[in-house]
Length: 139
Image (cartoon, rainbow, N blue to C red; front, side, top):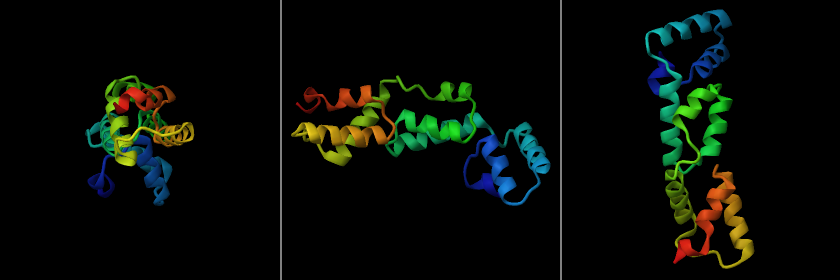
């Protein structure tokens, strides 16, 4: 309960956390099952919370999706809460670009490539990055 008081956890992540703290696997699994039945732990709630948090921090859908997969979240739950093709991601990408580089267009091909690498490392697709780095975005 102390862990859940701090933040949301995915079911598998919470179970692993309990095991790391020395709880036997069977007891950890039983405790997490009980919390799940009582509605105190939910993968859906965790995904919703994490996606919103990461989006606000300027991370893109590909990075968020990878993080969720690492935490053991089922593909069906991820797909329910995260659509990389959603046009709203372009707004997030534009804001990340504006905060990092201002409103100035890249002056050279090398600068454009450097910006593209940075934005892709934040979890945005090459297609999304190219849309934002087009010259007409800066007019």
